[in-house]
Image (cartoon, rainbow, N blue to C red; front, top):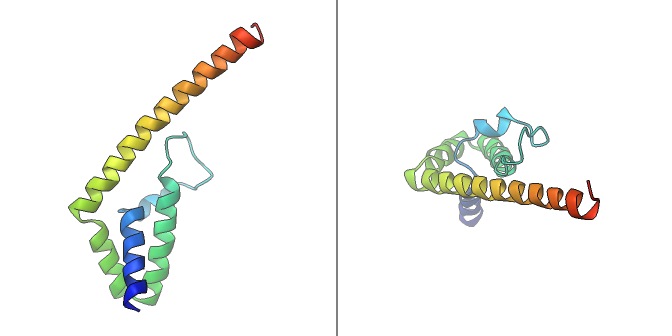
Length: 107
């Protein structure tokens, strides 16, 4: 029991800090490709809802634990870095598309 509880807490802490964000946007309704953390947020929200239905006290503990400065800082770092990677990937795709159209297709 204690190991499964620790596993649930670890999953919540790793995946998300704010649970309402996962409900604000559908996984498949992405306005931009920079929202890579929507899926982990949705998973964390599902886990939180399941745990909260079984034990509201543990659910509240998970909410409090997920809002600690260490977890918030880690999540903000991950958001910042994945945003940078997304921008670089979009720039690379634009360069490949331009190269394809100019060199291969001759437009």
